[in-house]
Image (cartoon, rainbow, N blue to C red; front, side, top):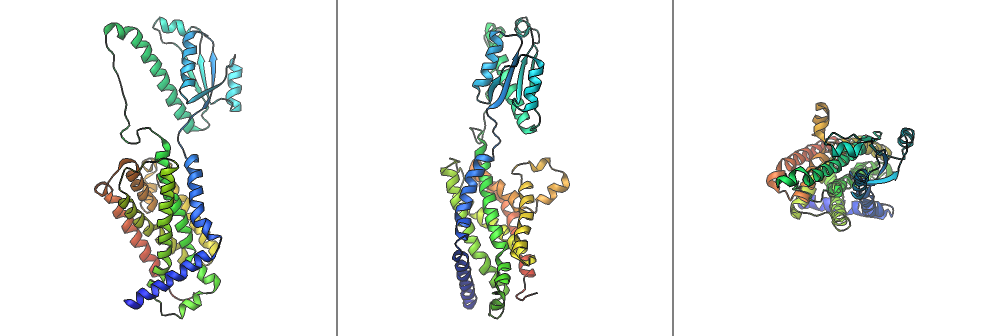
Length: 374
């Protein structure tokens, strides 16, 4: 046992020396995750603001101007044009100069005062379906609020009462998308760095010609695997701590849950990530092959993780594939810890799935690895 620990210690020491001897590796390990977190933390957002809006007002009354004012003061819409004809409206939408057009017909105000249904049309550029749907929701909310205020001033005020609806977000009370997205970006950054480093671990030994030296040593395959993974696990922990610190201080994302629980989740998560990296390393002959295989695994892992698209909306066959994706489970854990303060009593299914997946992949990688040149 003592000899085993000594051999693993020397292997870990050798791996750290080999990693940090390359000056280019240091910024990749410590600087790149932070820069990517800052860039993606701002870029990956579902918030829609300053939507280019045109107002096609054929009624030209104080009521239509009030509705337009409410749209602009909401912060979601920015009025950029006042077209005077249907042709101008079409040109604005065709050129992409306006995403939303508010169209008030003649007699809008008189129909409103006579309690008839006034004609208010909201035209949307549906090229970007997500932006169009969000803009439609914002527009409907503003119009409904205007209608409610109008009703309160007339019929219900005379009756002395009205229905007061006050929605409340239980988690993420400010409804900031960065609070939801930044934890996901943290998981992706750690995933990418550890996967790439581990995938090239054994392949690098073959390319630089040190595999033959390892073959004549008394080190066993399991000890070699541990010696290769422990340094990257330590780097993964450090990167997780680093980007989490940046996420909480720079983006002011709150952590409502337990830090020790998040550390435990990171350990189980890294077990799976390092296992997949080792598996790629055992099936690759060159570092270029290992890098390409890593990205072939990385891109589907993001798309099938639930980061951008709900897993429930995917076809059943694709949903089944997502159960092999460690990112799927860690996203639930890290968002639960950050936003909800969830504990192990709620998150244990994700912990168990990550542990089983990690042990299975590491065991498979160890069986595939043979301490000899093929």
